[in-house]
Amino acid sequence: MIPPGRARRAWLIGGMWFVMRESSRRVVLYAAGVACAVSVLVVVDRVGTSDDSAQVSLLVLLIGGAVLGFAAPRRAWLSGLSLGSALAVSRLITAVVDPAAAQPKPGGAAGAATLFVLIIPALAAAYGGGAVARLRRHGHRGGDSGRAR
Image: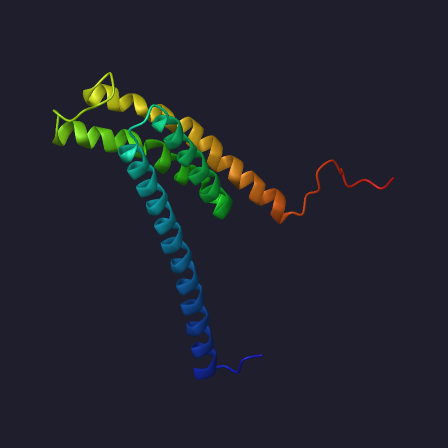
């Protein structure tokens, strides 16, 4: 029991400071993780020049989505939307800033907008990573229904 007065107020302020600090740390680390994954995805997509560069970009998208979904299952939607729209937004910016830049067919803003379809696999990967995290957290054993035999 904390005695009333100055000691109780100090304890309450210290507790609130701890909660705010830890919450902000998680938010900042998650935002940095999403920014890093989006940056890696865009760089891999821009650097790739071979015939299989689109598949490599898709692999980076799926791995990034799964890792972020595993790290924060409640925010899987955010990582899926961020990663899934990263290439479309990057190509839209390029189409506006430098219309003469080499773009895949169809080119321009219409072609870049078609890349928003990548939101679907990104969300699937993020929610898949989140599901693995939840199963791991709850100690689920494959095939064991938990019933006594």
